[in-house]
Image (cartoon, rainbow, N blue to C red; front, side, top):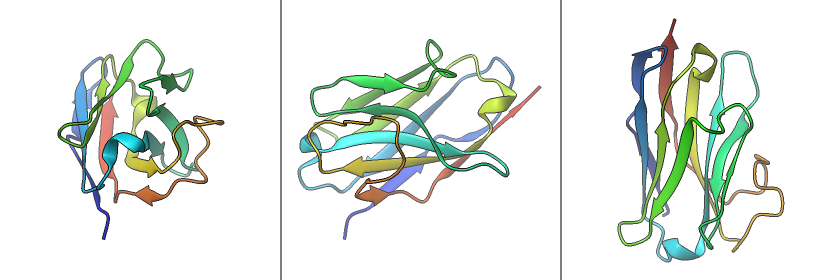
Length: 125
């Protein structure tokens, strides 16, 4: 059974930082595209940042320049460094994995093979 477990969420003030981690049990982690998605209150799940097997990162426009997605292939861990957080960033953040080697539509929230349970991020003004 594959598991993706997110951690590192919490409550911060506007302008603060958080680092999310996604620990996976994926057997061949380096061959998976990985991504972070979020769902705000009353909103649909949306793509935040993804990274493919060639280490190419893609970001939603509203987080570009503030968030950085990285992957540790040796430890099978995905990270999301979030700086200069805004109240609009509040939501549940999910880690996802795809068996594809690259992403045709990097921020699309469908077609992913595995999902984590999510972690809450709350940013207050």
